[in-house]
Image (cartoon, rainbow, N blue to C red; front, side, top):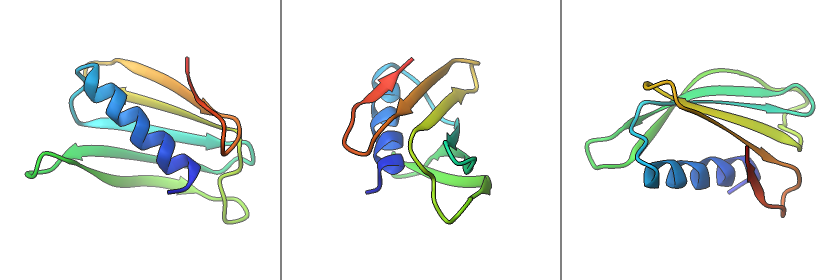
Amino acid sequence: MDPIQTMIVDALKKLGDDGWEPPIFFVAVAANGSMVYGRYDATDEGGLEATMLAEHIEDEALLLPINLMMSNAEGKAVRLSLQKADGPIVYH
């Protein structure tokens, strides 16, 4: 998995542990202006399925650092950041 995928998977696990339920919306914005926006919905098998709703990719990449915001239908939100590929995910 690339760093942004790892960051999203780790965040979804933590949010699930904190009681968040789908749909969960996310937007990731990279240092070079690339962005992705999407939604996670529950599957019949108990997992999550991503639907990409919008994206803009500069130079075919999301360059670090990346800021990620996730929000749910209850209005809760969390911001995360990834500064370098092998660095920690920081929850704000």
